[in-house]
Image (cartoon, rainbow, N blue to C red):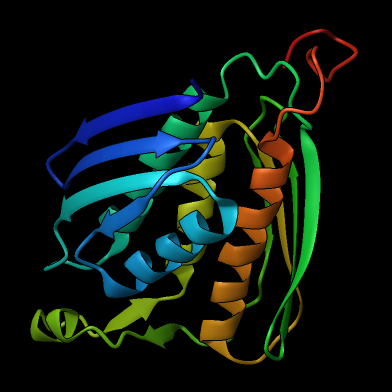
Length: 203
């Protein structure tokens, strides 16, 4: 039963999240079309079950929503992974997304570390959501991608290396990162043995 439910409410966001490491449906609603898209890709390519509702202060910008969703999802992962007995622990993926090529390497180490080298040149990525455009926030700040992953690894207590090996298109780079991360995290989370995969006997 590698599952978790997170309810997190602040003055900036209200989040309800259900997470299942071993599979299930996914349904994402954050009032940020681009974040919805990336999280749907994450759930689809990881095979994790994910139901997420977030109401945030998007009239300000998307920062609090992206950061707090990363926090809640990281907390859910850390709860669901439990004592880590039998997990593969390590995994990596080099994933092509059209012209972009992204490396994601994961260690479910018990330590929150991020090496982020996507090197996205554009400050914005277009968001095609009509609802978002009506809110007059029609562009997504690309620097928020690093904020999402930093929030996630701190709460999930994993080590993550995300590296752009090649890429020009901003959307392709970010999409490739979420897909590669999903695949590598899923593989590292799989049960492949019986004990804790550490010479210390604890992760």
